[in-house]
Length: 159
Image (cartoon, rainbow, N blue to C red; front, side, top):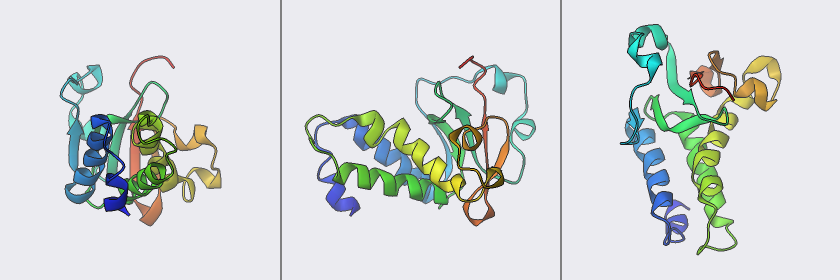
């Protein structure tokens, strides 16, 4: 299905980048950042091990809508969250009504990544609740599929 979906991604370079980001970090893990990011106060005043506990498999910073940011994150290779995000992206692409005018934010962008995060956590965390407020909580270690834990830190801006 990925090959079929990629045939629909002809008109928006951002969609290709969104898919590439997910594929590369799924396969190899590591840290991803957009080139125009710079470390914020959180990283200037704290060592990495103070920010990220050693048992965390994915680390995110909250974006302006409390979603996990897709422009900076760190994650282990073959992480189920990235797999779920990619599955959602493929489904979104194949369901597009107009491939000439895709809604990139929803199809492959921040919303699609956020849905992968939600689907990774919703069945396992937050004392059984699937409320978005609990699943997207900042500064709380949450456990998802396969017992893997993720952490999303507040970006320090008021929502």
